[in-house]
Length: 172
Image 1 (tube, rainbow, N blue to C red):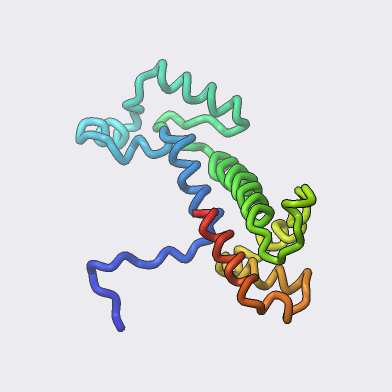
Image 2: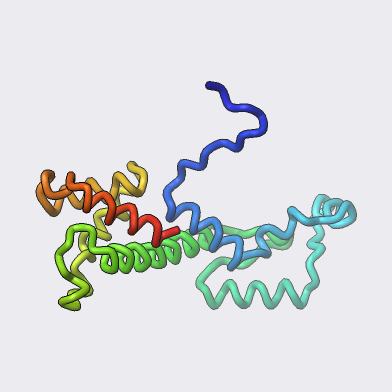
């Protein structure tokens, strides 16, 4: 079945990459300012002029410096990829915490971690899932990592699959 021109291409990136893009857009909107340029602003950029207000430009560069990110060049464009790296690191941290909490709260392997307050029960599993996300979809990464830590027969139970589905629901 071919894709119609109306169907959007499926985004197969990892959830961390998607989150990193959203974080980058929210935290560094100045890098996307050129997309909203008026005709006059676009012409000014082509002439080598920065259409940004000088005070705003200074404020943005100060904020970027505080975050350990390189300044914008005279055209208002980033001078390096540090802002992308910053967003990727934040996305990884945020998603790791969210996944660990979701696994803990749903306890797909029924380890009674919630009842026994074993908050680090799924910490190593979470790290393994994060490492797998570049190669596998999230649900398979969780199941495969659970198989790594537990027996395959234990992971193949319907209750585990329901627990993984509940975990995925918490991540949405």
